[in-house]
Image 1 (cartoon, protein in one colour):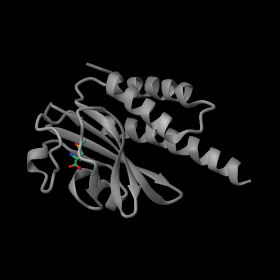
Image 2: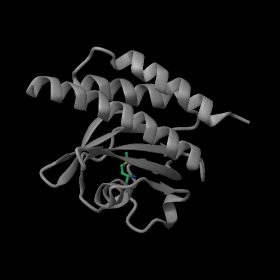
Image 3: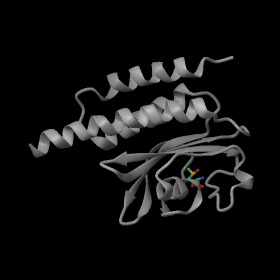
Length: 161
Ligand code: SME
């Protein structure tokens, strides 16, 4: 049985090392997607959608090509963005409005990126296994996303001072 909190602590340390000194958001998002995709077992997709003009637009990811634009509130990603909270879906077949980018996906976890009180995007993880994600995954991914957001907030603050 995996010690998930320990795995996420290890991923957080790796993320800090990967983004240290790097202000580019796309580069850091790409590395975070790759870190999660290769560091967590049983995923078939991991990546970002960023908020742009009231909808979500595909960002850096690992996995099969995915739908590019998601309306605010639509699907699991849009629901997490609209609510500003994580959404954990043990079985995507019984989530009304789930957007099937890859028919192999069976469960999903979406964590919002909250920047200065606003939803700036989401981190989306998909798995071909039913009920792949639990509260440890939610907490672990939220911690990774927080590191990412706080890192970029520090750079924006430095630029505007
Ligand atoms: N399933 C998501 C769409 C994005 S893909 O899974 C990459 C959703 O319902 O929002």
